[in-house]
View 1 (tube, rainbow, N blue to C red):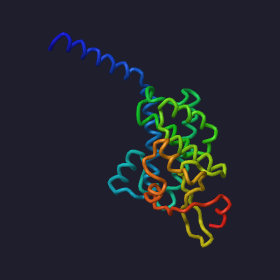
View 2: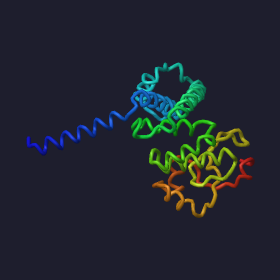
View 3: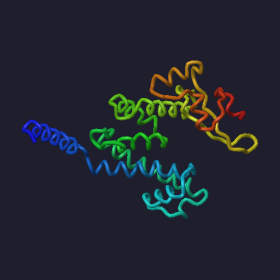
Length: 221
């Protein structure tokens, strides 16, 4: 091995060690556990997973089959969400938004997902916008939260990411696209923030009818 090769190798090793030293391992582990619970329970609730994957998640989340029987899984999801947001609020209070350079990936995404699944989006949206500006979350993730925030305020969404479920007048549970603003330019808006699929393609993947509603029409569904 030449001296130059040794020097390059040493510099690379020093750089790798420097990056590792910047990672907050305790916070990283905490966020990874929060992310596992947030995403894991949703995999279970959605139901489209193999028995092998379900068993894996139950083990990782320290759950029993009886914990997710019937409607119990929905109660469990609400419980997990309520605990997660308290933990995330504590983390934000202490660290701000945990960056990729602080906790790595996918741990850095935990804060986004937990807030997205909470009722505190409007409170933390400025922090999420800053995280997107810094490159810690994608512009598509920010777009999803912007849309959800608008939906929760009863306003039209911009990017067409939010699908709503409700019981119709026949008592049947239906899913529909939440009303959107500027429908004629929706795919342009989606493309600008990085979505690869058109609104029509997205809805097809989600098995939701491509039908546009106005806010004042929703009560008639």
